[in-house]
Length: 396
Image (tube, rainbow, N blue to C red; front, side, top):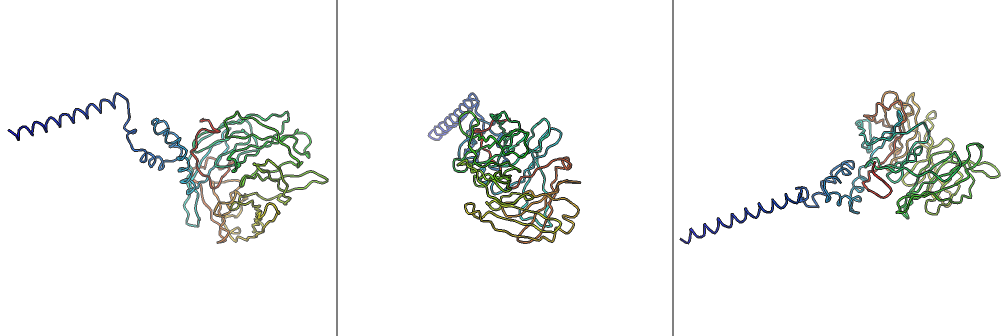
């Protein structure tokens, strides 16, 4: 009898357990909860960290929980740390009234055995007309100058900037980042189109990233000048080639501090050179293919205007890698490699890496851009993906 009573009690307990499980399942179903919401948060983060940034942006639609995880302050920092370890090449291609963005892995210490890299499509913008002012990268964002658009190709977000407050018709814009206040800034200069040898007349700044409505404000410029190149932003300072007006015209580099918003003239002759970021310092790179020489000047002390100078003679400029082609300087990688490209691509898009220490050149083919080989292609080195949402952007 005792044994039978124990069996009955065990059966009742089993039935109660099944009943509770059924009730719990019914409750979850009635609440419309998804199985994904029962996944531990740590595991969700591990899943997200293995996805490309474009996919992470879409994962906000999975559930409120996933959206809240992606929007937490520490999560973008995890993505940024991961991306910093794997910098990419970013390509902006202008064709048939559109700007197309592609990215690929960036070769690390390439040699003659390096495999081609494959370009992956991200997004595109439509534009009307033609302009020689294209785009450049600042703080992981791309500024499309002729459209006045700032975009994040990784997430598909973009922001169209308001028009400047001016009656002038000739406008020049630069994009910079102030690491002190962690603010993005657009510097705009205007002048009448007539009077080619006249300096800019109005100077305005647009600050992005705050909660207030975007609005241009006038600033003073005590240095009469006119820009003659695109800008490059290094450690919060914008550098660009310019002609400065006074008792006589002088050519050199003008720098604009994005924190103090003051202009200064460096006075370095750079007419046929390229401004580059060389290991965190301003560099002036001059390529002379005819003499097989590369000259690199680096600003060692900005306050004292002290420069260092190095001259290289890469023998590979004489061989088949660079024979019978016109080369352009793309920039310098954070590893210190000079990257060149063909000005006019014939069969395919390719990049030429020059290792200064080993004194060798290596050509790397980029697959997936054959359609754009006769069009305008801009390459950005060491591009890092950033998943930060909101702020200055709205999703396109």
